[in-house]
Length: 457
Image (tube, rainbow, N blue to C red):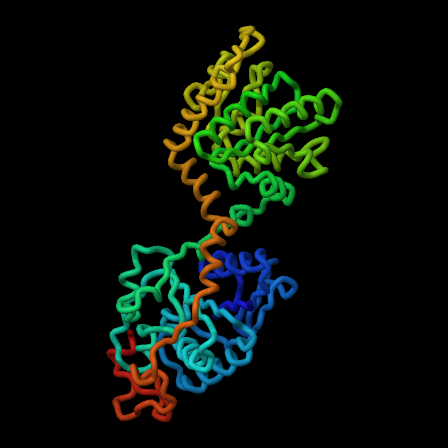
């Protein structure tokens, strides 16, 4: 299946949300084995690394467009030109996605050309993404009315709430299935929003940190006093409560025999607790981390976690705790160390992880103790809307997560738009009996004239 995205872009500056949405859709298609086509203006320029011919089949074929509400003197000629471009460049395409073409008043020429080409290609599936509910066009004249009649294919809107106004705008009240709510068009990959290190992105993806309801990193040399077992028990409690745990141990300088033995024991414990694949070591995910990891990458990893546990029984103070607090994690420090309470006060939570000073000995039901604490930790995270909102967005609103909502659209059955007799929108010889002409349209133009009051519509 070949998919095209029909745009009027003249640059690929992702600060413009429409471009960001199209870029995300293109990435989703490429990541899932598709070879998409994207139509842009002939003057298209970009410094964006993604919008390059080595990655995308970019076709710079559409005429230069000025964003004006007026009708060009050579409107019909321009429509015919765009029509010919679509015929040539969509001939090998099965699905065409549009952005803004259907509703924005600047794209009347493209709207008409798209509808004419659709009549030639009843086999072509059209998916028109709208990003806000447009107003119904009050004009009955061509080409203004094109913006408010049934289009070929389907309208895709990001929510159900505005479906009613969209149906009304395009006269689709009797065929509501032609408007589909799908938020996949607004997916965001947090790893691409900011310039993270390549190592950070690799570790996040391989450790599945974006898939966790409770995602944790623990930067540590693998000494037994660091008490990783306590975190594993908490993660097991998270899983038993029906949530996804993810733990990435940043095991720097831990390649000695005693460290490897401890890691092997933790692997066995993770398997016993049902956490296989949910706990990882940075040294195993990337060879560059076998002896260490850049401090910047550790800081960046905290952006993809929501909780930090510091069960170490030997550290009365740790810089990592301070960093986790600054990076916006809900932090659980060792309450058995008075310096922790002195330093952080009520900015963090405290758990009785134990310490050498107190000589605490844990009972055989330590696993039950920590698994039960997981319920309170989940409650803490949910109570913090900033943290929990970020968690949900990272897990549920990414391109990887929303592909399941996007791909069914590609299998929809093509649908026709308005027929010739339903409206006076497609005729090649427009009625020229209406007068007077607006000042900016020459008397020799070939399109139906509009009254001055209708020009602003």
